[in-house]
Length: 460
Image: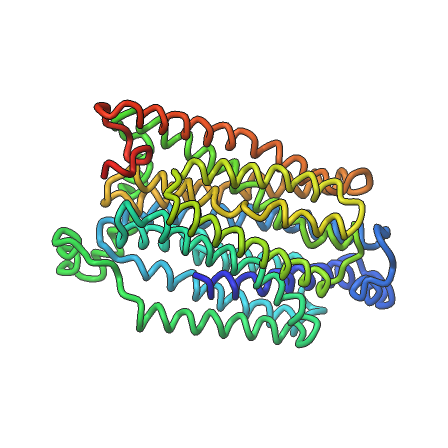
Protein backbone atom coordinates (compact mmCIF):
# COMPACT_ATOMS: atom_id res chain seq x y z
CA UNK A 1 0.00 0.00 0.00
CA UNK A 2 2.86 2.37 0.80
CA UNK A 3 4.44 1.73 -2.62
CA UNK A 4 1.10 2.25 -4.37
CA UNK A 5 0.44 5.62 -2.74
CA UNK A 6 4.09 6.70 -3.01
CA UNK A 7 4.27 6.00 -6.73
CA UNK A 8 0.82 7.43 -7.40
CA UNK A 9 1.48 10.67 -5.52
CA UNK A 10 4.92 11.05 -7.08
CA UNK A 11 3.16 11.91 -10.34
CA UNK A 12 0.62 14.33 -8.83
CA UNK A 13 2.80 17.46 -8.95
CA UNK A 14 4.28 16.17 -12.21
CA UNK A 15 0.81 15.94 -13.74
CA UNK A 16 -0.28 19.30 -12.36
CA UNK A 17 2.79 21.02 -13.79
CA UNK A 18 2.23 19.34 -17.15
CA UNK A 19 -1.37 20.58 -17.03
CA UNK A 20 -0.22 24.12 -16.24
CA UNK A 21 2.36 24.09 -19.04
CA UNK A 22 -0.08 22.76 -21.62
CA UNK A 23 -2.70 25.31 -20.56
CA UNK A 24 -0.17 28.14 -20.83
CA UNK A 25 1.69 27.19 -24.00
CA UNK A 26 -0.94 25.33 -26.03
CA UNK A 27 -4.46 26.28 -24.93
CA UNK A 28 -3.93 29.95 -23.96
CA UNK A 29 -1.02 30.37 -26.38
CA UNK A 30 0.95 32.66 -24.08
CA UNK A 31 4.47 33.52 -25.16
CA UNK A 32 7.41 31.33 -24.17
CA UNK A 33 8.77 34.17 -22.02
CA UNK A 34 5.56 34.33 -19.98
CA UNK A 35 5.27 30.56 -19.59
CA UNK A 36 8.94 30.19 -18.69
CA UNK A 37 8.52 32.91 -16.06
CA UNK A 38 5.45 31.16 -14.66
CA UNK A 39 7.35 27.89 -14.53
CA UNK A 40 10.25 29.47 -12.66
CA UNK A 41 7.88 31.62 -10.55
CA UNK A 42 9.60 34.93 -11.35
CA UNK A 43 6.49 36.99 -12.11
CA UNK A 44 5.62 37.59 -8.46
CA UNK A 45 2.60 36.66 -6.37
CA UNK A 46 -0.99 36.64 -7.66
CA UNK A 47 -0.24 37.73 -11.26
CA UNK A 48 -2.91 37.69 -13.96
CA UNK A 49 -1.19 35.05 -16.13
CA UNK A 50 -0.99 32.57 -13.25
CA UNK A 51 -4.64 33.30 -12.48
CA UNK A 52 -5.81 32.62 -16.05
CA UNK A 53 -3.80 29.40 -16.31
CA UNK A 54 -5.02 28.13 -12.95
CA UNK A 55 -8.65 28.88 -13.76
CA UNK A 56 -8.40 26.85 -16.99
CA UNK A 57 -6.69 23.94 -15.24
CA UNK A 58 -9.16 24.03 -12.35
CA UNK A 59 -12.07 23.67 -14.78
CA UNK A 60 -10.36 20.75 -16.53
CA UNK A 61 -9.71 19.05 -13.19
CA UNK A 62 -13.39 19.42 -12.31
CA UNK A 63 -14.67 17.31 -15.20
CA UNK A 64 -11.72 14.93 -14.81
CA UNK A 65 -12.99 14.24 -11.31
CA UNK A 66 -16.39 13.16 -12.62
CA UNK A 67 -14.70 10.44 -14.71
CA UNK A 68 -12.19 9.23 -12.12
CA UNK A 69 -14.85 9.08 -9.40
CA UNK A 70 -17.82 7.60 -11.29
CA UNK A 71 -16.10 4.68 -13.05
CA UNK A 72 -14.44 3.21 -9.90
CA UNK A 73 -17.77 3.61 -8.08
CA UNK A 74 -19.42 1.28 -10.58
CA UNK A 75 -16.63 -1.26 -10.15
CA UNK A 76 -16.81 -1.03 -6.36
CA UNK A 77 -20.43 -2.22 -6.40
CA UNK A 78 -19.28 -5.52 -7.93
CA UNK A 79 -15.82 -6.00 -6.41
CA UNK A 80 -16.74 -6.36 -2.74
CA UNK A 81 -19.57 -8.85 -3.21
CA UNK A 82 -17.60 -10.93 -5.74
CA UNK A 83 -14.56 -11.13 -3.47
CA UNK A 84 -16.77 -12.14 -0.53
CA UNK A 85 -18.30 -14.95 -2.60
CA UNK A 86 -15.06 -16.28 -4.09
CA UNK A 87 -12.46 -15.35 -1.45
CA UNK A 88 -10.20 -13.82 -4.10
CA UNK A 89 -8.89 -10.44 -2.96
CA UNK A 90 -5.47 -9.68 -4.41
CA UNK A 91 -6.57 -9.61 -8.06
CA UNK A 92 -8.16 -6.24 -7.30
CA UNK A 93 -4.87 -5.01 -5.93
CA UNK A 94 -3.08 -5.94 -9.16
CA UNK A 95 -5.55 -4.37 -11.61
CA UNK A 96 -5.29 -0.80 -10.19
CA UNK A 97 -1.49 -1.13 -10.20
CA UNK A 98 -1.55 -2.05 -13.88
CA UNK A 99 -3.77 0.97 -14.52
CA UNK A 100 -1.32 3.27 -12.79
CA UNK A 101 1.48 1.91 -14.99
CA UNK A 102 -0.57 2.78 -18.06
CA UNK A 103 -1.20 6.26 -16.64
CA UNK A 104 2.56 6.78 -16.37
CA UNK A 105 2.94 5.67 -19.98
CA UNK A 106 0.19 8.10 -20.96
CA UNK A 107 2.08 10.91 -19.22
CA UNK A 108 5.24 10.05 -21.16
CA UNK A 109 3.31 10.05 -24.46
CA UNK A 110 1.69 13.42 -23.72
CA UNK A 111 5.09 14.85 -22.82
CA UNK A 112 6.68 13.54 -26.03
CA UNK A 113 3.84 14.93 -28.16
CA UNK A 114 3.58 18.07 -26.05
CA UNK A 115 2.67 20.50 -28.84
CA UNK A 116 0.34 18.10 -30.64
CA UNK A 117 -1.82 17.04 -27.66
CA UNK A 118 -3.81 19.73 -25.85
CA UNK A 119 -4.66 19.89 -22.16
CA UNK A 120 -8.06 18.26 -22.72
CA UNK A 121 -6.50 15.19 -24.40
CA UNK A 122 -4.07 14.59 -21.55
CA UNK A 123 -6.67 15.07 -18.83
CA UNK A 124 -9.29 12.90 -20.55
CA UNK A 125 -7.02 9.94 -21.39
CA UNK A 126 -5.49 9.99 -17.92
CA UNK A 127 -8.94 10.06 -16.32
CA UNK A 128 -10.29 7.15 -18.40
CA UNK A 129 -7.28 4.92 -17.69
CA UNK A 130 -7.39 5.75 -14.00
CA UNK A 131 -11.15 5.22 -13.78
CA UNK A 132 -11.41 1.93 -15.69
CA UNK A 133 -8.64 0.33 -13.61
CA UNK A 134 -10.40 1.18 -10.35
CA UNK A 135 -7.77 3.65 -9.14
CA UNK A 136 -7.16 3.96 -5.41
CA UNK A 137 -10.87 3.28 -4.72
CA UNK A 138 -10.78 -0.43 -5.63
CA UNK A 139 -7.26 -0.83 -4.26
CA UNK A 140 -8.16 0.58 -0.84
CA UNK A 141 -11.45 -1.28 -0.46
CA UNK A 142 -9.65 -4.53 -1.29
CA UNK A 143 -6.80 -3.83 1.09
CA UNK A 144 -9.07 -3.07 4.03
CA UNK A 145 -11.29 -6.07 3.24
CA UNK A 146 -8.12 -8.19 3.16
CA UNK A 147 -7.01 -6.88 6.57
CA UNK A 148 -10.50 -7.40 8.02
CA UNK A 149 -10.46 -11.01 6.83
CA UNK A 150 -7.12 -11.91 8.43
CA UNK A 151 -7.40 -10.07 11.77
CA UNK A 152 -9.36 -10.46 14.99
CA UNK A 153 -11.58 -7.80 16.57
CA UNK A 154 -8.96 -7.10 19.22
CA UNK A 155 -6.11 -6.15 16.87
CA UNK A 156 -8.08 -4.91 13.87
CA UNK A 157 -7.90 -1.23 14.80
CA UNK A 158 -4.13 -1.47 15.22
CA UNK A 159 -3.62 -3.40 11.96
CA UNK A 160 -5.84 -0.98 10.08
CA UNK A 161 -3.83 1.77 11.72
CA UNK A 162 -0.71 0.38 10.09
CA UNK A 163 -2.41 0.52 6.69
CA UNK A 164 -3.65 4.02 7.44
CA UNK A 165 -0.12 4.96 8.49
CA UNK A 166 1.18 3.71 5.13
CA UNK A 167 -1.28 6.05 3.45
CA UNK A 168 -0.34 8.92 5.74
CA UNK A 169 3.35 8.40 5.05
CA UNK A 170 2.93 7.79 1.33
CA UNK A 171 0.97 10.98 0.66
CA UNK A 172 3.50 13.60 1.80
CA UNK A 173 6.56 11.58 0.72
CA UNK A 174 5.12 11.13 -2.76
CA UNK A 175 4.06 14.76 -3.02
CA UNK A 176 7.40 15.91 -1.65
CA UNK A 177 9.53 13.74 -3.92
CA UNK A 178 7.48 14.75 -6.92
CA UNK A 179 8.59 18.38 -6.84
CA UNK A 180 12.26 17.60 -6.24
CA UNK A 181 12.37 14.85 -8.88
CA UNK A 182 10.55 17.03 -11.39
CA UNK A 183 13.15 19.76 -10.92
CA UNK A 184 16.04 17.31 -11.27
CA UNK A 185 14.96 14.76 -13.89
CA UNK A 186 11.89 16.25 -15.57
CA UNK A 187 8.64 14.67 -16.70
CA UNK A 188 10.19 11.57 -18.26
CA UNK A 189 12.14 10.73 -15.12
CA UNK A 190 9.17 11.17 -12.77
CA UNK A 191 6.83 9.06 -14.86
CA UNK A 192 9.55 6.45 -15.39
CA UNK A 193 10.31 6.09 -11.68
CA UNK A 194 6.63 5.95 -10.76
CA UNK A 195 5.91 3.31 -13.40
CA UNK A 196 8.85 1.22 -12.18
CA UNK A 197 7.57 1.33 -8.58
CA UNK A 198 4.15 0.16 -9.74
CA UNK A 199 5.80 -2.68 -11.67
CA UNK A 200 7.71 -3.80 -8.56
CA UNK A 201 4.47 -3.67 -6.59
CA UNK A 202 2.76 -5.87 -9.18
CA UNK A 203 5.56 -8.44 -8.89
CA UNK A 204 5.16 -8.49 -5.09
CA UNK A 205 1.39 -8.98 -5.31
CA UNK A 206 1.64 -11.70 -7.96
CA UNK A 207 4.45 -13.81 -6.50
CA UNK A 208 4.60 -13.09 -2.73
CA UNK A 209 1.24 -11.90 -1.39
CA UNK A 210 -1.28 -14.69 -0.77
CA UNK A 211 -5.06 -14.49 -0.69
CA UNK A 212 -6.67 -14.92 2.76
CA UNK A 213 -7.74 -18.46 3.76
CA UNK A 214 -10.89 -19.38 1.84
CA UNK A 215 -13.96 -21.20 3.12
CA UNK A 216 -15.25 -24.44 1.54
CA UNK A 217 -18.17 -22.48 0.05
CA UNK A 218 -15.77 -20.05 -1.63
CA UNK A 219 -13.66 -22.89 -3.05
CA UNK A 220 -16.71 -24.42 -4.76
CA UNK A 221 -16.53 -21.68 -7.40
CA UNK A 222 -13.08 -22.91 -8.51
CA UNK A 223 -14.57 -26.10 -9.94
CA UNK A 224 -16.83 -24.15 -12.30
CA UNK A 225 -14.05 -22.52 -14.31
CA UNK A 226 -12.87 -19.02 -15.10
CA UNK A 227 -15.88 -18.15 -17.24
CA UNK A 228 -18.12 -18.82 -14.26
CA UNK A 229 -16.01 -16.45 -12.15
CA UNK A 230 -16.31 -13.77 -14.85
CA UNK A 231 -20.10 -14.22 -15.10
CA UNK A 232 -20.31 -14.14 -11.32
CA UNK A 233 -18.49 -10.81 -11.25
CA UNK A 234 -20.85 -9.10 -13.70
CA UNK A 235 -23.96 -10.55 -12.04
CA UNK A 236 -26.20 -7.68 -10.97
CA UNK A 237 -26.99 -9.50 -7.72
CA UNK A 238 -23.57 -8.28 -6.56
CA UNK A 239 -24.93 -4.74 -6.60
CA UNK A 240 -28.05 -5.83 -4.72
CA UNK A 241 -26.04 -7.76 -2.10
CA UNK A 242 -23.68 -4.83 -1.57
CA UNK A 243 -26.44 -2.28 -1.08
CA UNK A 244 -28.38 -4.62 1.22
CA UNK A 245 -25.50 -4.55 3.70
CA UNK A 246 -26.41 -0.94 4.47
CA UNK A 247 -30.13 -1.58 4.90
CA UNK A 248 -29.88 -4.92 6.69
CA UNK A 249 -31.56 -4.91 10.09
CA UNK A 250 -29.47 -5.76 13.13
CA UNK A 251 -29.26 -5.28 16.89
CA UNK A 252 -29.33 -1.78 18.34
CA UNK A 253 -30.31 0.02 15.12
CA UNK A 254 -27.49 -1.37 12.98
CA UNK A 255 -29.01 0.08 9.80
CA UNK A 256 -29.24 3.60 11.22
CA UNK A 257 -25.72 3.40 12.60
CA UNK A 258 -24.21 2.30 9.29
CA UNK A 259 -25.99 5.15 7.48
CA UNK A 260 -24.66 7.65 10.01
CA UNK A 261 -21.14 6.21 9.66
CA UNK A 262 -21.26 6.57 5.89
CA UNK A 263 -22.43 10.17 6.27
CA UNK A 264 -19.45 10.84 8.53
CA UNK A 265 -17.13 9.21 5.97
CA UNK A 266 -18.40 11.60 3.32
CA UNK A 267 -17.85 14.55 5.65
CA UNK A 268 -14.30 13.46 6.46
CA UNK A 269 -13.13 12.28 3.06
CA UNK A 270 -14.57 15.08 0.94
CA UNK A 271 -12.51 17.99 2.31
CA UNK A 272 -9.35 15.89 2.05
CA UNK A 273 -9.92 15.46 -1.70
CA UNK A 274 -10.89 19.08 -2.14
CA UNK A 275 -7.82 20.39 -0.35
CA UNK A 276 -5.53 18.01 -2.22
CA UNK A 277 -6.91 19.33 -5.51
CA UNK A 278 -6.16 22.99 -4.77
CA UNK A 279 -3.27 22.92 -2.26
CA UNK A 280 -0.43 23.18 -4.78
CA UNK A 281 -1.98 25.86 -6.97
CA UNK A 282 -3.10 27.74 -3.85
CA UNK A 283 0.43 27.98 -2.46
CA UNK A 284 1.73 29.00 -5.88
CA UNK A 285 -0.74 31.86 -5.97
CA UNK A 286 -0.57 32.95 -2.31
CA UNK A 287 3.15 32.57 -1.57
CA UNK A 288 4.72 32.29 -5.05
CA UNK A 289 5.98 28.78 -4.27
CA UNK A 290 7.52 26.55 -6.91
CA UNK A 291 7.45 22.75 -6.88
CA UNK A 292 10.61 22.54 -4.75
CA UNK A 293 9.26 24.81 -2.01
CA UNK A 294 6.01 22.87 -2.04
CA UNK A 295 8.02 19.65 -1.72
CA UNK A 296 9.82 21.05 1.32
CA UNK A 297 6.48 21.86 2.91
CA UNK A 298 5.16 18.37 2.15
CA UNK A 299 8.26 16.76 3.63
CA UNK A 300 7.74 18.79 6.78
CA UNK A 301 4.06 17.88 6.71
CA UNK A 302 5.08 14.23 6.40
CA UNK A 303 7.21 14.36 9.54
CA UNK A 304 4.46 15.91 11.65
CA UNK A 305 1.77 13.53 10.39
CA UNK A 306 4.05 10.53 10.83
CA UNK A 307 4.72 11.43 14.45
CA UNK A 308 1.05 12.13 15.12
CA UNK A 309 -0.28 8.98 13.45
CA UNK A 310 2.29 6.70 15.06
CA UNK A 311 1.55 8.22 18.44
CA UNK A 312 -2.21 7.78 17.98
CA UNK A 313 -2.21 4.15 16.84
CA UNK A 314 0.48 2.97 19.27
CA UNK A 315 -0.29 4.97 22.42
CA UNK A 316 -4.00 5.80 22.15
CA UNK A 317 -5.16 2.63 20.41
CA UNK A 318 -2.66 -0.14 21.16
CA UNK A 319 -1.48 0.60 24.71
CA UNK A 320 -4.20 2.77 26.26
CA UNK A 321 -6.94 0.88 24.44
CA UNK A 322 -9.03 3.99 23.87
CA UNK A 323 -12.27 3.52 22.00
CA UNK A 324 -12.31 4.35 18.30
CA UNK A 325 -14.65 7.29 18.90
CA UNK A 326 -12.02 9.02 21.06
CA UNK A 327 -9.53 8.76 18.21
CA UNK A 328 -12.14 10.36 15.96
CA UNK A 329 -12.75 13.23 18.39
CA UNK A 330 -9.03 13.98 18.67
CA UNK A 331 -8.53 13.79 14.91
CA UNK A 332 -11.45 16.02 13.91
CA UNK A 333 -10.59 18.61 16.58
CA UNK A 334 -7.05 18.77 15.24
CA UNK A 335 -8.38 19.19 11.69
CA UNK A 336 -10.75 22.02 12.61
CA UNK A 337 -8.07 23.95 14.52
CA UNK A 338 -5.50 23.60 11.72
CA UNK A 339 -7.94 24.89 9.10
CA UNK A 340 -7.83 28.37 10.63
CA UNK A 341 -4.05 28.50 10.20
CA UNK A 342 -4.29 27.29 6.59
CA UNK A 343 -6.99 29.86 5.86
CA UNK A 344 -5.70 33.03 7.48
CA UNK A 345 -1.94 32.55 7.09
CA UNK A 346 -0.56 35.90 5.89
CA UNK A 347 2.85 34.45 5.11
CA UNK A 348 4.51 31.08 4.71
CA UNK A 349 5.84 31.05 8.28
CA UNK A 350 2.32 30.99 9.69
CA UNK A 351 1.32 28.47 7.01
CA UNK A 352 4.05 26.15 8.31
CA UNK A 353 2.44 26.17 11.77
CA UNK A 354 -0.69 24.45 10.43
CA UNK A 355 0.80 20.90 10.17
CA UNK A 356 1.84 21.11 13.84
CA UNK A 357 -1.75 21.91 14.83
CA UNK A 358 -2.93 19.21 12.41
CA UNK A 359 -0.52 16.62 13.83
CA UNK A 360 -3.19 14.24 15.21
CA UNK A 361 -5.49 14.42 12.18
CA UNK A 362 -4.67 10.97 10.86
CA UNK A 363 -7.01 8.59 12.62
CA UNK A 364 -10.58 9.74 11.94
CA UNK A 365 -11.06 7.60 8.82
CA UNK A 366 -9.22 4.75 10.55
CA UNK A 367 -11.72 4.97 13.42
CA UNK A 368 -14.63 4.89 10.99
CA UNK A 369 -13.29 1.84 9.13
CA UNK A 370 -12.66 0.00 12.38
CA UNK A 371 -16.12 0.77 13.77
CA UNK A 372 -17.84 -0.27 10.54
CA UNK A 373 -15.88 -3.53 10.25
CA UNK A 374 -16.93 -4.48 13.79
CA UNK A 375 -20.61 -3.98 12.98
CA UNK A 376 -20.80 -6.63 10.23
CA UNK A 377 -20.21 -10.36 9.82
CA UNK A 378 -16.95 -11.73 8.35
CA UNK A 379 -18.71 -12.67 5.09
CA UNK A 380 -19.73 -9.01 4.71
CA UNK A 381 -16.24 -7.46 4.94
CA UNK A 382 -15.89 -7.01 1.19
CA UNK A 383 -19.37 -5.58 0.78
CA UNK A 384 -19.08 -3.06 3.62
CA UNK A 385 -15.67 -1.94 2.35
CA UNK A 386 -17.21 -1.56 -1.11
CA UNK A 387 -19.87 0.74 0.33
CA UNK A 388 -17.17 2.58 2.27
CA UNK A 389 -15.07 2.99 -0.88
CA UNK A 390 -18.14 3.95 -2.91
CA UNK A 391 -18.93 6.71 -0.44
CA UNK A 392 -15.31 7.87 -0.47
CA UNK A 393 -15.08 7.87 -4.23
CA UNK A 394 -18.31 9.76 -4.76
CA UNK A 395 -17.08 12.61 -2.59
CA UNK A 396 -14.67 14.07 -5.18
CA UNK A 397 -17.69 14.48 -7.47
CA UNK A 398 -19.08 16.93 -4.94
CA UNK A 399 -16.08 18.37 -3.14
CA UNK A 400 -13.48 18.87 -5.89
CA UNK A 401 -15.82 20.98 -8.07
CA UNK A 402 -16.99 22.77 -4.92
CA UNK A 403 -13.45 23.50 -3.73
CA UNK A 404 -12.23 24.60 -7.16
CA UNK A 405 -15.29 26.84 -7.61
CA UNK A 406 -14.87 28.42 -4.17
CA UNK A 407 -11.13 28.80 -4.73
CA UNK A 408 -11.65 30.53 -8.09
CA UNK A 409 -14.35 32.79 -6.62
CA UNK A 410 -12.33 33.80 -3.53
CA UNK A 411 -8.73 33.71 -4.78
CA UNK A 412 -8.57 37.50 -5.06
CA UNK A 413 -10.35 38.17 -1.73
CA UNK A 414 -9.45 35.32 0.66
CA UNK A 415 -7.49 32.56 -1.14
CA UNK A 416 -7.61 30.35 1.95
CA UNK A 417 -11.40 30.42 2.30
CA UNK A 418 -11.66 26.81 1.12
CA UNK A 419 -9.87 25.62 4.27
CA UNK A 420 -12.33 27.46 6.49
CA UNK A 421 -15.14 25.82 4.56
CA UNK A 422 -13.54 22.43 5.23
CA UNK A 423 -13.42 23.02 8.97
CA UNK A 424 -17.12 23.90 9.09
CA UNK A 425 -17.93 20.68 7.23
CA UNK A 426 -15.96 18.65 9.79
CA UNK A 427 -18.03 19.86 12.76
CA UNK A 428 -20.90 17.34 12.18
CA UNK A 429 -18.37 14.49 12.19
CA UNK A 430 -17.06 15.69 15.54
CA UNK A 431 -20.61 15.69 16.93
CA UNK A 432 -21.16 12.09 15.74
CA UNK A 433 -17.92 10.91 17.36
CA UNK A 434 -18.97 12.56 20.63
CA UNK A 435 -22.32 10.78 20.38
CA UNK A 436 -20.60 7.43 19.80
CA UNK A 437 -18.41 7.98 22.86
CA UNK A 438 -21.42 8.88 25.00
CA UNK A 439 -23.25 5.72 23.93
CA UNK A 440 -20.17 3.58 24.50
CA UNK A 441 -19.85 4.94 28.05
CA UNK A 442 -23.56 4.39 28.63
CA UNK A 443 -23.32 0.75 27.55
CA UNK A 444 -20.35 0.23 29.85
CA UNK A 445 -22.63 1.15 32.74
CA UNK A 446 -25.22 -1.40 31.59
CA UNK A 447 -23.40 -4.75 31.76
CA UNK A 448 -26.54 -6.79 31.21
CA UNK A 449 -27.32 -5.05 27.95
CA UNK A 450 -25.66 -6.44 24.85
CA UNK A 451 -24.20 -3.52 22.92
CA UNK A 452 -23.22 -3.23 19.33
CA UNK A 453 -19.92 -4.85 18.48
CA UNK A 454 -18.37 -1.52 17.59
CA UNK A 455 -19.30 -0.12 20.98
CA UNK A 456 -18.19 -3.02 23.16
CA UNK A 457 -14.91 -4.46 21.83
CA UNK A 458 -14.07 -5.87 25.24
CA UNK A 459 -17.09 -8.18 25.15
CA UNK A 460 -15.87 -10.08 22.11
